[in-house]
Length: 122
Image 1: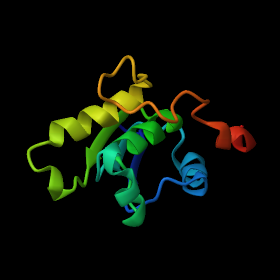
Image 2: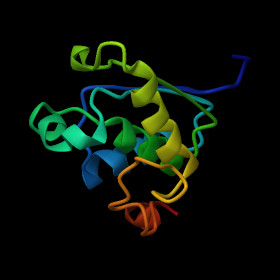
Image 3: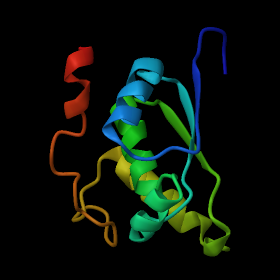
């Protein structure tokens, strides 16, 4: 980090339009984003019940914010030695890779404009 760079820290958050809008207002263009990536997207319903993000959702938020660097953290212990899989899912969503470009990544929901809720902020 150098003087003038911005850091964002996001944890214990549900993937909702209201939360994403609040993050956009606070962290748009953030230089380094530390963001929870508790569950894999296959466990999205469980993540919602626990008020946490999936790695895919975290990556999508990072992309929507225009984060220049992303550091995932707060992985569920259920994944044990699978941290690389969690990080790969986040990085795939952050880069905007489609399901066809990222084998094994669920494709639901990424085809539309990733930032429709920010129109009011522009």
